[in-house]
Length: 195
Image (tube, rainbow, N blue to C red; front, side):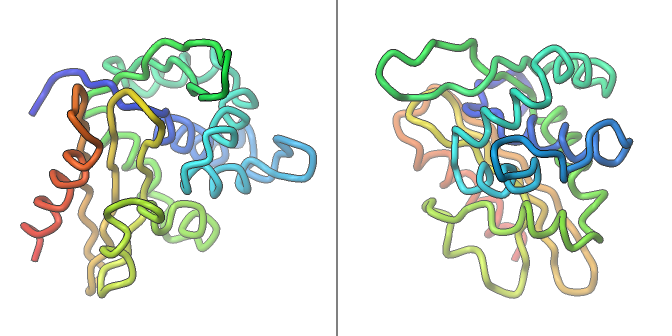
């Protein structure tokens, strides 16, 4: 359904912006973002739920440039607040909010480059260490991102690569949840409907 949702950590925003910047030659994915790691290395880690990696990529892309990118791409329903870290005394950030339409647009940026092995490596099996992990490894390959963290909303965004070169995008946004399992249940219901 429509509306705006707290999407939790900004994994999809950060990864799609970085991939688009690479496509347009603004900032290559092999740009160093920390001591020995590139943006690509950090995206692979944020896909697995590493909030520090998400923050590092966001810092490298720069908040103002991400905001400008969102506006330029027409993702006007999305607000980028940053990455909330959870160590004692970590500064509070504004929520990352978005709409299903905007998230599907960001997912399509990633999907447009799935013919490249490096991009597939960065976003393959986004549900590792989640309740959806067993969906990975079957006849369909899953690419995408899912938000992590202790509070806020949840995002599950995936491109399902089906046999015969068919791809389907699924975006689930959920907030004000009693538990994270509700977002996973919604995604699982959509997954089952594909069969």
